[in-house]
Length: 520
Image 1 (tube, rainbow, N blue to C red):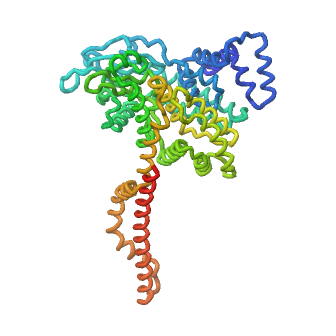
Image 2: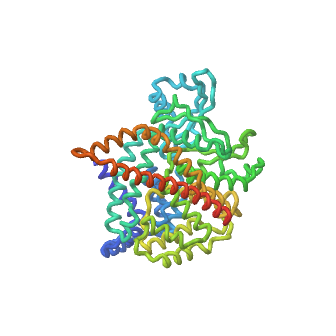
Image 3: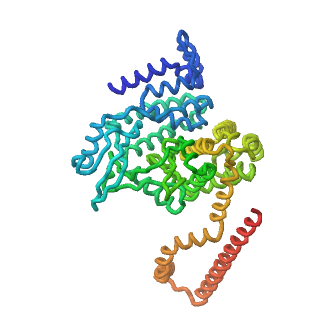
């Protein structure tokens, strides 16, 4: 019954904001387009369609707001005006009662608040759709007092999101069946990705683990600060972390007045992004200005501070190598190689002509080279690439949704910090260095070192395994000595061939690396 009422409310909001006209007319069934025209009669739909969609999502509640934020990064699904409007969605909602937050904390820790914290600020410093944050002073096991931030989930969120997600899955199925591009754009997989990320955000222990992993990965770079997690006080509903002191990245004038090198800060942001993506394959995927601060303390002056680790992206070794080769080819303007990579990866049909795809990619990317960031819109580049992808039947890769979202966040951050930043030239040396590491002798030695424990365990067993093999294949008869000797000679030749081949392969890699360095 509750699901039916919720569905009825959604339909009412759709009709109120004229979203029926927005979506029905784009479906492939002619009668749906006619229905959309009839439904718009007699209603005042003066506001732009993107604004109406944004307002509708805000009325539907925090889960739909968050979905709109994720959807705004899928410019392959949306016209540019709608994507830009959805990007304005703010995930700020009135906080829960402080009494409710305190009750959640005491239930999680099974003790009164005063036994955990020396001081607890009942007024939250931040409030979002899933959780809110309070400042406090924690007394640890050693009796030391530490300033901390306490993140508390809103009560009853799981039931709320389960109901709304079930409706989203149903709507995605309708879109896939009725829309012209339904199968190619994979709306059910998009909602599935959103489902996964949202459930991950409801487990604060998982978020704490994400933060700890990023903190280890970023140690030694001296570019970003990640708060320490206090594991004795991290529960699925409550997370206690080190309190970070910095200025929000949006307070640019104050940061500049404090003496921070803004241009260096912009370059550091690009370095952080590419390091997390290509070196680690584990990246902060919610890098909007609300989650980024800048430290002004003497010991860490001018470093980024990252907050909120509920959403992180991961990439496989194949994804990393494929993306790095694409980026490197783009930066070298080798559009033929980009086209070949798309075909090799199976992202486009195998019968696609390389020269036609190459020409289409060139027409999208060439106008944006040798320009500062203020004259480039990665959103526009992505939009044109997606239009090209539709023509060549490129299949959308759901695992890259978060990377697209983060790339657009980086563009916005870079544009805010240094509009003159040359994104291509800043990223190119990093990518080329990373590619050299992937194909050079160092990579080979690292792989051999990683496999060494397996080989060390296998070598002592070889005589026994060989004996068992010979016994198995000689049951009922004995080979004569000449045949055994001939087999041994063939084996020796094979081993010699393998050794010489391995030596040749290593030498070839060394020569290849030297050639690449000379070209660079």
